[in-house]
Image 1 (cartoon, rainbow, N blue to C red):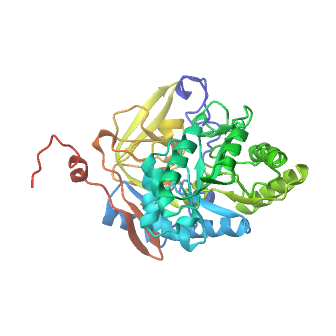
Image 2 (spheres, rainbow, N blue to C red; image 1 turned 180 degrees about the horizontal axis):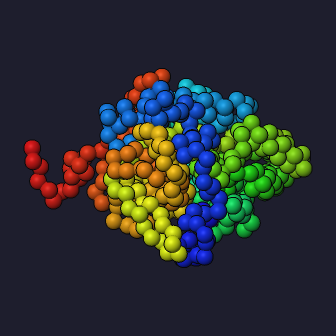
Image 3 (tube, rainbow, N blue to C red; image 1 turned 30 degrees about the vertical axis):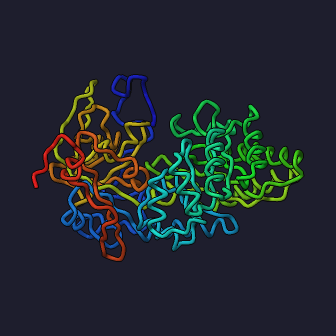
Length: 471
């Protein structure tokens, strides 16, 4: 996000209510390819279509708001990652979005699966995902969670603290099993992203610090434990990252640990996980690398650093989530009110209120994430107008799309589509203001299939012990 003034752009001395990176489009109906999934297009009558299904038809059947997931696009991206990183192991990061259907797609496309909670693990197992291909994350895994991971045969558990190691050893002794573990380390790399999604700087909750020596101590402890099999080291530097510079530094620091471990034990660690966090395009300003280019750069980094430390190249894995499911999804909303707002200096902005908001996409409110939007149910000959798409919640920060040029004739009842909504929108959704969460509908080859049904008010009210059943 580009801030023009500490109190917001309405207090800045600017000649436009739009930020400098947002340019006025020549054609307000054009769809910027990099923002949308591969099957998205406008039909002859101007309706946005995805997976061969018009969004108007989806809305007629399922209502709004609704998340649409382009199955063909998801599979294409999963396949592209698997092929670009052939010889490495690609774990789909389930926290971006996970359901039984998606777990099936991941398995069929030959990827492994990363989970980070009891619920995600349970979904994966009940969907029939091979537990040996599951990696289990989390900085405070419960006893029940670890027990399920051990009894189901999860392929690797990424340990995050000394307390967790102790907890895991006790469970292994009780169950008579040995856990395969990786040690998550904090490399001190500050990725160029928002503070809340930068995960490798020292002052945060994840992992064992490399600089303080905690990481090496954790590795030695797991290595000498009779209950644990140390597979290697896991590093993750953050999210929505567009270059490999941070990965280069993190790889150097983790492989230095490998060299120190080898010097002390005579053994080489067999595995290194570089994490995920690869960025996608949410706005025209974003310019993510092609997966083939990322693969070439990361392979070169690993090979170079292994030579520098006289190490055999270990088994490498990584964990894209957003990069696969993010562009495959869009959210569709219906406009409920249109309000021109005078922001001073003779400038105005149109506020378009829709029937969703921060309950179905918290990212803009949580860390000022930027999104784009397009008129979805028709095309328009009107001039582009600087607009802001806002939600229905009782919060002034309930903003879905902060800055966008939309047709000046967008009116009540129109549909707006927000691209790149496949990652973290539904998985971070809430019931704020007693709002049921939208459904997820997969589209492919002209068919629409429910992945997650829409929540109802009955679903929410059933949790309230103070309400009597009307049955």
